[in-house]
Amino acid sequence: MKKCVLLFLAFMVLACPTGAFAQDLGTPPVVTQQKIEIALYGREASGGLVERLARVEKDLFGRELPGSLSERLNGLESFIIEGSLGQPPMVFKLGVCEWSIGHEVYSQKPVSTRISQLERVLEGAATEDKPLAMRLERIISLLFPDQVSWAEIVLPANYVFKVSFVDTIKPATAKKGDEFQLKLEENLIVDGYLVAPKGSLVFAKIESVKQPQSFGRPSEMTFAFEYLDPLGSETIPVFLGDASVTKAESDETVAAAIGTSLVGVAALGPAGLIGGFFVRGDARDIPAGMPIYLETAKEMTVRAFPVPEGMLKKVQSGTDGLQAGSYTDSEDGVSEDIGDDWEELK
Image (cartoon, rainbow, N blue to C red):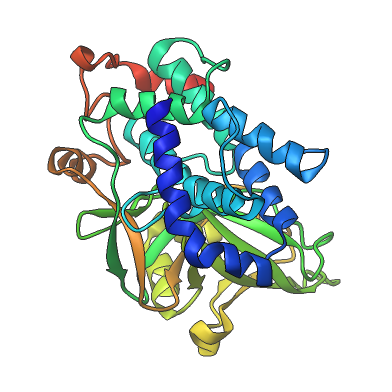
C-alpha cells in the first residue's frame, strides 16, 4: 500500500503546479469529484464533497491523504484517469490487464467492478476489503514482469477500423440528439503499440431522423460519430468517410449485414464527422451487433501500450487478440485456462 500512496503523491506533485490553478478557474471541484466517482463506482455518490473525497481515498489507498482539496482532487484525477508524463493512470493499466487475458476491455464498467472480475479470474476470489490501488498493482505483478508503461505515438488520419452497434436503434422511436455507443471489433495497433483494444467504445449521437413512410419508403437517419475512447486519456475523433465505406463494401460479412442501408456522406469530410444510414422500409431497425467501419478524422499524438514482442506475435498470428496465458505461465501464478474463467464473468 505504501508504494501506491507514494505513486499517488508523485501524481499530485506533477498535477498540481498548473492543475490546481486551472481547476480554480475552470472545472468546479464537485464536477471533478463526480468524474472520479463515476470512473470508480459507475455512479455519483451522496454526501458532502469533503466526505466523498475521503471515501474515495480510503477505497483507493486505505487512508485519507494530505494536501488541499484542490490538490487532492487533481492528484486523484491524474492517478485514476489522466496519467502523468511517465506514469499511465489506473484505467490504462486496468485495460491492458483485461486485454492480456480476456482479449478485450470492458471500459463501460466501473474500475471497482473490473478489478474484482480480474481477481476472481486470477486468484479465485475478489479481495474487496483491501484498497483498490494495491489490488490493481498485485494483478499487474501476476501478469507482467515489469510495470505497465505507455509511450506517445502518432496515429494517422483515415485509419480504418471495424466497430459494431452496442444496442438496437429503432428509427420509429429515435430522436435527434439521442446518444448511443459502438464498440471496437478488433485491436487498433499501430507499429506495435496498442492504441485501443477490442471492446473500446465509440461515442455517437443521432443527428437527424426521418420516420419510415407508406409504400415501403425507407426511414432515414443521420449519425454523428464523435470519438473513440482509447486506452489513453485522449479522445480520438472519428467519422464515416470514403475509406471506411470502401472497406465496408469490400468486406463480404459487413456488406451482407448492412445490406443496402449504408450510405456514407463522405462529402462532409472530417469537419462534419457525419455518416448516413438509410434504412429500408422492410428493415426498420439497426440491430445490436451490426458491424460497420469508421476511420480516424485526423492525425494526432496518442499514448499507447508498447506491446512486448512475444505478445505481439501472438496477436498477429491469432484472429482475435491474445490467447489466455500468452504472456505469463503457471510459474507466475496464472492458470493457462483463465480465458474460460473470464468468459464466464463477462
